Amino acid sequence: MAKTRTQFVCQQCGSVQLKWMGRCPDCNEWNTFVEVIEPQASKKDRTAFGGPRAVPTRLSDVKTDRLDRIPMAMQEFSRVLGGGIVPGCLVLVSGDPGIGKSTLLMQVATQIADTHGPVLYVSGEESAQQIKMRAERLGTGGDQLYLLTETDLDEVLIHIENLKPRLAIIDSIQTMQVDDLTSAAGSISQVRECAARLQSLAKSTGASIFLVGHVTKSGSIAGPKVLEHIVDTVLYLEGDRFHSYRLLRSTKNRFGATDEVGVFEMRGNGMVEVANPSEAFLAERLPTASGSSIAVTMEGTRPLLVEVQALCSTSAFGLPRRTANGLDINRLLLISAVLSKRVGLKLGDQDIFANVIGGLHIGEPAADLATACSIASSMRDLPVAADLVMIGEVGLSGELRTVGQLPARLNEAAKLGFRRALVPRTYRLQDAPSDKIEIVMARSVGEALAIALMKSS
Image (tube, rainbow, N blue to C red; front, top):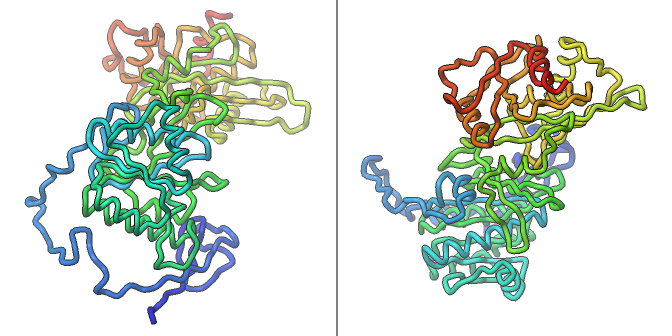
């Protein structure tokens, strides 16, 4: 009789305990532990990536010729991956239901199949006829794109070994299961075991494998946290289903940067790359409207110009609200306090709503100055100068602090026709792009507001 092992795994963080606990000691969530019973493999059944008899190898003797990245025609996707698909990589693509994960991966599969060889698309949720209907709608397909509707992972592994595809797509990992485990598909033990076997196959054969992962109500990837540790790259497809723009963001990447973002637009014929996201985000801007300013944020190595809007309205209740969409709520509270204390704006009875246009989320403090100008513009009902972009962090004393990669930000602003840039006074002028954009400096947020609202008043 095969030996079994009983563990209790937290569904929220993946913590493993030998006994059931009401509260997880790692994530402090209640009632998240699930009993997992697994058969223990004998030592003779365990193998390494290089085979059952892996031996130490000198680092200088390791050859990387076969690990040249697979180039992609979809530049936005390639940028997020770090410059192309690395052979033998295991990539997890996650996102909300209906956000466009299957659509995007079908387009990627077609491009790779047309240029680099066979691609296997494995679906555990849809039939081959349904996938064919989507491919016809997208105008994708080809002789080198193979479909497989299967949920038994052992069968999937056999087909991958026989077909030897350049790329295999598993849609989704929560539908796969192995017969060695008695738990249902999508459980913690099944997801972890399936991902581990696919990882071993990818490393030993050199086939790149993309996994589609579901998300929970809280927005995290369904399954144990160890799933994110197993894979090489974790991609999130973000955006509102009721808006056209989608953001592909990397949160983990062993072969590239983790802060790159790709911008797509969802259309009837699939995902279309947005070559100039800044121009798209500013297309519907009203330059004469109050409560609007332009910030320059960095997404990886790419500078993006985004519109930051704010609206101040007298509160009908005793406790005014602070609402942020696309901004950190704590940064909004900080900026509101600085404007009240250091600038003298009476915001104590004002509801403040701040929004970043385009569905982008700004996590860096470089947008502090633009947020402050938008709030002051709405409060005073004066528009910000239309030819001005704002870059800078706001300190608790009301001072402006410089941020990184200012030359790249200024170059991007100049390309889009902005003539002036408001930056902290500590910025070195020798780093500015000459004759492209005028640099306007301010030491405090009060000085910056006087410059930004002066020509409109």
